[in-house]
Image 1: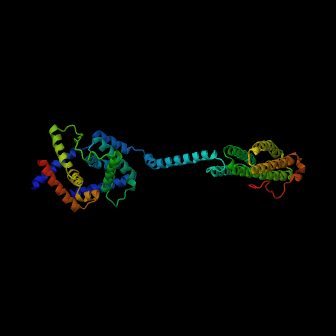
Image 2: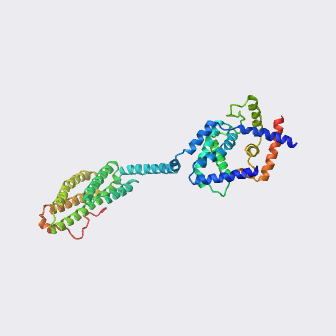
Image 3: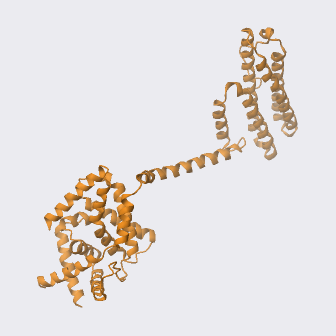
Length: 235
Length: 181
């Protein structure tokens, strides 16, 4: 076990230094490293964030789409209503009545769909219709008040009157839809739908009163100071 | 040798600082210093020229990406070799194969000028080297072939210089025996 023999082994091992990478590969890799786009470094971190963002967006959108088709009593229905509330919050004040009419229409469609599927869920759907009609009532009352104030100031209220007047046929349409639904419901719910139809009638009368009254007499069309809902939901 | 090594490490530190200051060309100098050693280090673990090239490239990319985060308190070589070691582990994890470590294949020399006799001689040494344990092989590779000192190897493999000397001694005894068979 002499030192010479160890030295000989060491010398033999050094021969393996000739195990080197291919010179072309070596030079190409160096070029690749030195000319590397620094933005790639950013992408290393940004890419996972982008993918996560896309997955999150996809989940949000797909949940939103699923929620949009949900009916009262279903798990995603509260989400649908929450999204609608957010949408309403971003609606211009002059378009709010139209939006509410659109939402009421949706509630009636939901009620129809629920009845077709399952009578037991119709109470919840009916509650949604009642609430929606109540909101129309509050909005019409507010528009009526606004119209009266403008008329008192001597401003032109023709456009506002037209908007309200144009709303009457859609209310009639809803009454008709509800009248068609009414016979398919339980006796208790029939009473509730009857009250909703009556409420729509009262809204129509209010609108007709303010729109048909000459502007100078707008004061006569002044709404009651404290607007009470025409229907008590769930009663 | 030790002074040369210390000088090399100091020069590496200077280059690292230059890279951190935005001098990409300084990375070229780091690459030139380490590429062959890292390639061999990886080749001895994967036994394939192509795989060794891919993994070596991946290691340098990681070094380039992470050099700004490298803390100068620790050894740069230890940091680079840890990346290389992890790259090899990831490679085997992905491939779900441990072939290569146990299969003595023919060593792939890129030098076309080697004679058949020279290639056979190297092949014989490589075969003997492969009969050592993983730890013995690593210390022999890093000390005898790549010429790192025991202090540096201790930073790379996480063993004390004393235990590495003992390991190397045992490895040489075994190698002498294998080569004389």
